[in-house]
Length: 159
Image 1 (cartoon, rainbow, N blue to C red):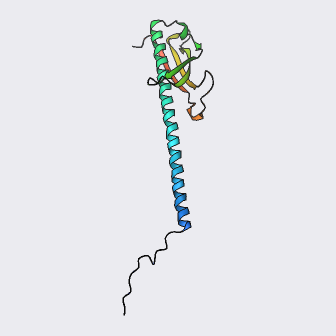
Image 2 (image 1 turned 90 degrees about the horizontal axis):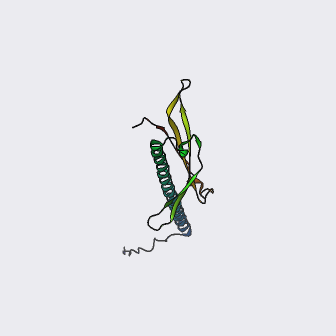
Image 3 (image 1 turned 60 degrees about the vertical axis):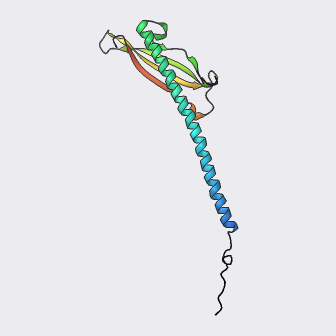
């Protein structure tokens, strides 16, 4: 019986149009999912920066009010009630661009004593920081419109 030579290309048919379309579909789906992930992570990074600078703004305002309370508890900024907003901006130190703008308001009320005719020597203070773009307008992305509220009590007897 004569030996037959082996032709390795005899059994190969290559791949067809269906296999190519499936591969392109899987590749396109993967790229779209990766693109959404990158876009989402960039948005969350911006949100994290906005929250941290809002926290810094609230803390700075609270420390300023606490210092004023220690020096002069009867100052105009510490009178009970709502106080007008203060607008501030966080500046990038590298290129001097505006990173975030905030509207900071605070509310102060006397702490009442449950005993009749008694007033405690302290005040409840609530500082609210809201992101703004130009004075009163909100930021264009809804997920970045997070309002931060910080509350504390000022007392003359605190160390």
